[in-house]
Amino acid sequence: MKVLDLQCSQGHVFEGWFASEEDFQSQKQCDLVQCPLCNDHQVHKLLSAPRLNLGARPPGPARSGHDANQPAHPDAGGGSSGSAQGALTTAVVPFDQGDAALLPQAIQAAWLRLARHIASNTEDVGAAFAQEARRIHHGEAPERGIRGQATAEEALELLEEGVAVLPLPLPVSAKETLQ
Image 1 (cartoon, one colour):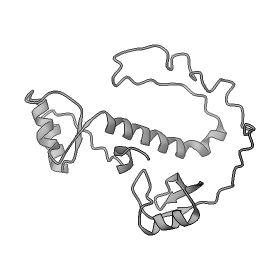
Image 2 (cartoon, helix red, strand yellow):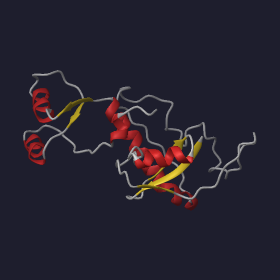
Image 3 (cartoon, helix red, strand yellow):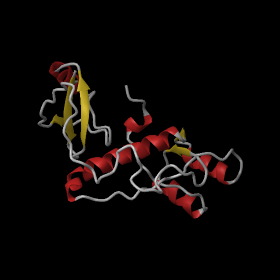
Image 4 (cartoon, one colour):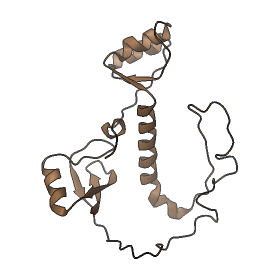
């Protein structure tokens, strides 16, 4: 199994797992390799060093003197405030200048987690989004989280009617299960 560091033309960095170099090239030629964030098919390999797992734990910098399995802040996790569905937990994590290089990857990972959470907790109503949002708003359909497609004009009309909508482009990979 080859784990390759890949990058799309938009600068998003991600991993791809392939049986061999030939497998990667074959999938790339068939446009099967795409960025999980923006669906860009213009993907190229980045330089990466092989890692041999010989049973030893890889050396790593100590992180702010706290255990990785414990919340970074006493208020992060543990207690329950509000309803279980849709509850958000925030954590205060000390920022180290060495973390600055990890920031784009961390933002990308957080965005993908958010997109997958939204996709798994909403119903896709497709092109009927504006009509279904109105039905829910007027009490004609059961209240639930929905997602779909609407034109800019439809979205503005919904907002003017008091229907809360948020334009949010979701990557295709967030809507699918990973293999």
